[in-house]
Image (cartoon, rainbow, N blue to C red):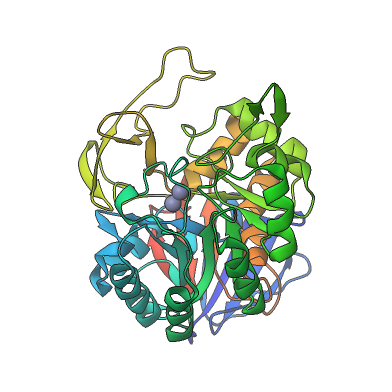
Length: 412
Ligand SMILES: [Zn+2]
Ligand SMILES: [Zn+2]
């Protein structure tokens, strides 16, 4: 997908994200970053287009390793048109790479979705590039199912998941509850295949998590959502998945930073306990992302999207920052956020620098799925996946493989 054209960005505050370069210049050639540095060091040649970003930020495009849909489409729709719509809407939020996530469903349906994800993987779409698939379910705990359809939950069966893993070449990540019968065996198989083994929708104890790490699990899916905390048995306290994640350096995790799932204090607690390198931001977006309020079906469950500003919450959330809930309003069912909102929340609600918030949406997730050699930072030779935004993280321009896929307005 390399683009022949030469693009030069100038007058940019470049977030690499290891450092910030003021008055920065970045040159794109044939879809790759050809050069990057301060304007006195990097020469802009006569050929190609020059884009003056007028002092705004230029950062690595965001990498979302956990999202289901957007723009009215869901990965489970299993059509190329659905993937195309998801790609387009998330590019508006500054996302350049997607790991499309399936939901708990009959294995036949999951396999169909994975086949279509594979067919669009690495292809030129109208927005973000699809890197591969994240299998979220069906191997989950009934108690911690959240919005996963209980009808199809089950224990991991090798003959079933081996078939899925053997038939597809695009699975980057699997979330499962390791305490289920067969859960550790699944973890070992994922590790053997270099697929990110992620602990999710789980009622595990601390002891279960230690065994899971030994088996090969390294990541924890949306911390605080769909997992156990401290429980008491005969008066004794037993640590759950939350405490294990915060405590154990062996584990990385991800935050649904839509401003609803976790209050600022919990987001801050996660960052404080895990550090800036072990937390990634995810949207966990549903088909409602990029749409207005209404009712939508997610994995066979009815959900409602509304503009909720919760009384008694730590913050009053911004208007237009919609929540997605089951119709009963008992639980969230994914989010309606695009990634720029998540980055903004980490700055506005958690108090991170823009540089650190960007890191959690770029190089950190890139490392988790093993694409950091070509994506995740603004480094010579990497893919020209870029995003331009202002102080409030409003996206001005999104560039995928050197190609402008979204532009909000005049930059000058
Ligand atoms: Zn989930
Ligand atoms: Zn999810």
